Length: 605
Ligand code: OXD
Ligand code: MN
Image 1 (cartoon, rainbow, N blue to C red):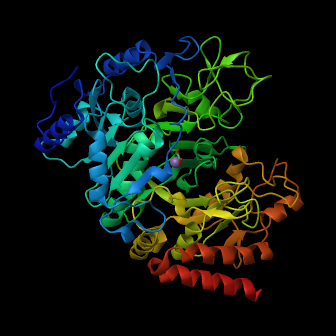
Image 2 (image 1 turned 60 degrees about the vertical axis):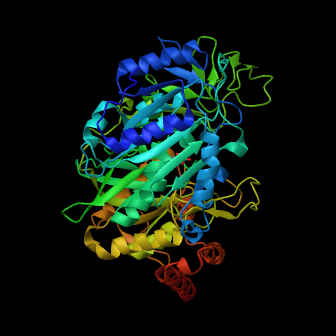
Image 3 (image 1 turned 90 degrees about the vertical axis):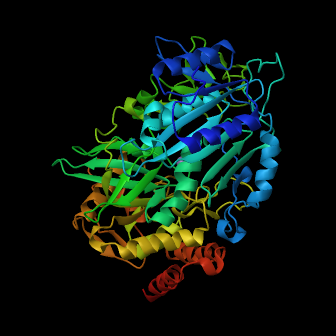
């Protein structure tokens, strides 16, 4: 145990001491980020029955957790942006007055760590020596969080060294909210608080994060969605850069030319698969820089450079297979934490969509016996996860930790759109691209919440759950950034849609590795090559501009994929108008003008 601070940073020490006083833990440990520390925590977790060691021969250094059935996902309705003024949180965020929220939460934190250890995790989002990186300090009483943070971020003494005696850090406070009475244990169960006691709170003005009651994913690993997106988006607005919910990939042509591309897609659109894609077109190569978040700043040369602030993948296990993403499968061959997947007889893991039948009887994610022939529910939770080290991904790009980042040539924006939206098109310019990005979303295919099937849940820039301030101001920030920059050096902007269907409901596009054909056209467009036609919605690939050699898609289907569906676009215009109405007078005029111009162009032809 490192009970004493391994830093001379006065503000940090005072902050930690204050929380020790409030939470009243039994022990304190300052994390040094070492392998010994990781191994020791794993042993403790296994000894108390919360984690299970997996088959060392099949899955070296891997463990399995089963969470409480009530604590399985990000809880958006318990996530708050507590800005001083409600209007600054905007219509897409939950808001509570920060003073009232802090009072409620302080009552909950009082004594919340009794019987537990208070861990201090110094972490860096991004390579420690990167000018784009930022330091956070997470306090937690969850060993699961410490272990996951060790994979997902850079943790430990080296971060405190970089912080020095007065460096800036984002304070991140977390407790699972389950104090233990003297002598009481978790009895091998995942600790958390009931839903109405969970709070995932952000204080944008003071750049603080307070999380209580959940031990799962983005609710608890505070470097990810809370810091790297919600708080960082506010910092990015104030400091003139971009913190985005984007994958970053490196695309190399057969001639060895390289371009870096980012992509924003709402959750569950295959971002991790695209980041690790294996091209079907000969000679092309995709390598991964990141699969979820991109931080981008302008370099001295006027180009936009991106880093991946994370060091691992917190990927959805269900549906990941040798077919959909062999590189992710290799990344979780070793040194991986699995959460809420099925356990096989020989202590390996299995999930639905893994590409093979369940090998006999299993233990399901709830810890019960499970057999495929009689099962009434899946063995793995649909949001089951693997936490894998980025360095274990076979296609991680050698420069993925380059402190200066990689220069971005193109942004892709997409969603699940069975109708209307073509396979790919390019914006006319930056503002038109911002307009396209502000309208992305996914169509509701099963009755969900209060939305009708066929309506589109808009998720501008895939940031609805992650923007730490008013979305109208966020659009303004995007516009301002591009307007100030050298237009020739800005990334080109593309809309993509892998999910188009025929009227009869058949997929028109095979997706996965075949998406490389679209990436190739994007690559060529970035060099002002790749033929395109100007249409009312943007530049679309000219006939034959998409390489279809060896592709099993009929000419008719290809035509449909790249056509403009007039009726669909008329409906789209109406839906965008409704979507924009949410932002009231904070919607930038440039975007309402774009909508009017699009409508006029569509009417003209
Ligand atoms: C994620 C998400 O888990 O976007 O990355 O929901
Ligand atoms: Mn995400």
